[in-house]
Amino acid sequence: MADLTDPDVRTALRKYQDGGPISALFETGEIGDNTFAALDRRAQEAEDQGDQEAADRLGDVLTY
Image (cartoon, rainbow, N blue to C red; front, side):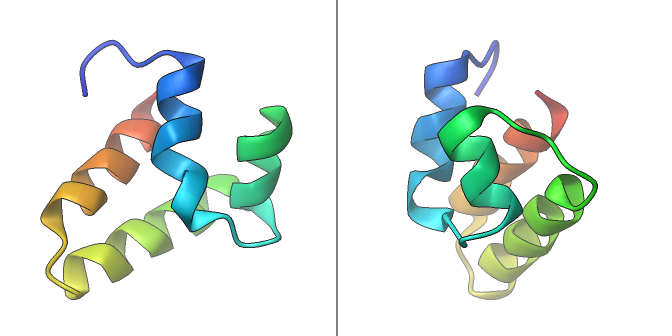
C-alpha cells in the first residue's frame, strides 16, 4: 500500500489484534516500546505461513 492513511492502518491490523501492542495501535494509535517488534514478528509469521500479501501489508504498516 502506498500512502497509507490511519484508516488503512486500522484495516490492515484488524485481524491481528493481540490484546497487546498491536491492539493498542489498532484501538488508540498508541505506539509503545513493543509495537514495532510485535508487528515485525507477526509479519514474519505471515510470511512463514506463505501469506506474502499479509506480510507485505504489515511491512507497510511498520514503515507508516
